[in-house]
Length: 471
Image (cartoon, rainbow, N blue to C red):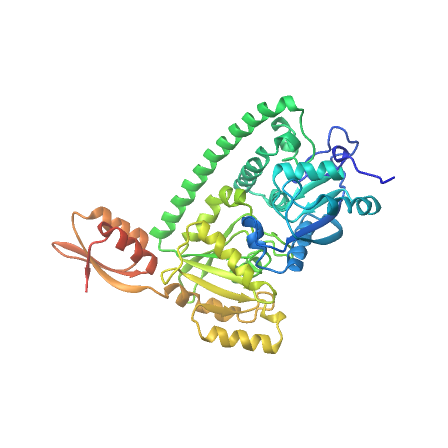
């Protein structure tokens, strides 16, 4: 007879009762201070026909095997013990269980033999599909969205980061209450994928979740306003902001540390960095710039996270320059690039000649001579690419010296005249541009400013923001 695991008795306990797995369940006997490493089975369902939703559409840009390997990497980020990883080729999707019932039942012997305690489904499951698979196999199941949310829950350290992750968790969990909500009074013990209340608690908890989401949303609005004030302050002081973005594990934090001499966590691990970090660095012309390291992106980043982290991610689209760090040694680098750009577009980034994005082709130390030569040839055809290795340092000094030129690319020197009754417009220009010179006459004030394409676009949309441009 096949031995099965009771999901209500599973114990996934992390140190310090962190929000990834929470405290031991009421039915268990494991101490919260004891660490239990779950045996995990990773499944990547590959639908041979056209993608059925946003997540599968994005995952379809890369090979099924690469998707499976990335899912295993996500599990390693949580220190889960991946016992087996399996690629499931599907001719059609089952609306009740996503994967056909027959394929799932074939896993029962494996689950018993390998003492599997948790199944990771590398796809987006509906709450009903998730419950049906759990009932069929009598084991806990987490989909890709849930897994990524758990990683973020473990990585968040700052107050703002914890709030953002909690908001994403609550939004995700709200539709899964019947199965997984533990109770808000126990929320400090974990966001809770493991166990839940009786049916009578569901409506009460749903209201409590809604109230909590509302309170967090208001606090994050305050965060957004504060960040906007800081951005305006930097603009007044004419300090440009350079934001680093990229697929997770592309080497952003390693390059950030090399350029700023900081000590941000940089490991060969998915989502090693979560909370944004900003450091001042000196440009070749002696002026200062702010370099910002943000959370790494990933294919089909959960929409709950994009929404919850809006206050943080909007720093990227508001930056004077976006550095897109790319791992050029990765076989799916083009698909990764599209994933990053998809997220930036969802944040309101407008592509085109006015978009200040500079690609940094990283990890060239992992390429052979032929591959490097091909990239060199491609880079020489464009002026928005730099090749380097953040680990070895190759190309980093030249990149640092050229950052000022990159920032100035697309900008122009303009003389603008303001009548004395245009004080508000004059003050706005001081905030938004680098003022190189000022001349006051009896009738007007003339500013010589360095105007980038982003500022020029704002003025074109609202001419009242500028005075008279002197040709």
